[in-house]
Image 1 (tube, one colour):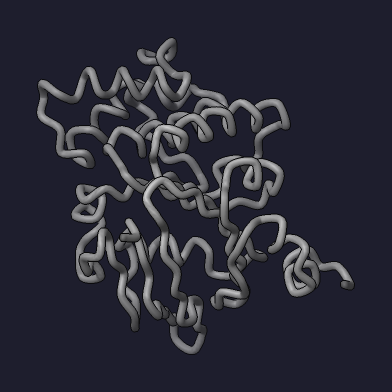
Image 2: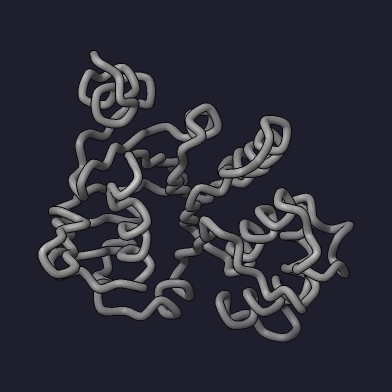
Length: 239
């Protein structure tokens, strides 16, 4: 059974249809990439999956259960974690305290469970040595790591990554990709929106293309990137 599935999901803002009859499924442990030009509806799709937006039509299912009417907190507790394109930590809290908030309120861990779980996530994301550092003083790479770590602290079975590699140098991007690949290898399913294609295609096993809210195609990354429609619409090339 698919861990996550969307069936005919649509969303409009006035006359603008930003998500248009999107359907796909994500298998347990799979890594799915999403690409598309700016304004294609990628982040809106994430908001529909997490419950920050309600669809005008269609269903969102988690483990076959209809969660379309559930709140973001309910979906988080059910196993959907998310990072944001612009890191949004609690700047006045330490790195460890940021994870503790996520574990206690997002992951619904007890006061006894959360500390060890947070230290484990810090180690897995390369942040253990910065546990006591204020989040507001971190450089970009470590803010991105913290964004990923906060999502991991909620005990997700599916993580949504929204352009997490954006703004990083090639070396920093390589470090972050290695961390993401390790997390995926442990069995966590991933949906990753990204413009840094070499980072994305080094992890994902399937690639989806969105354009004007519609799913243009989905398939193996090499097949998708070789398709005429993708080169014309996404890459802006004359195929």
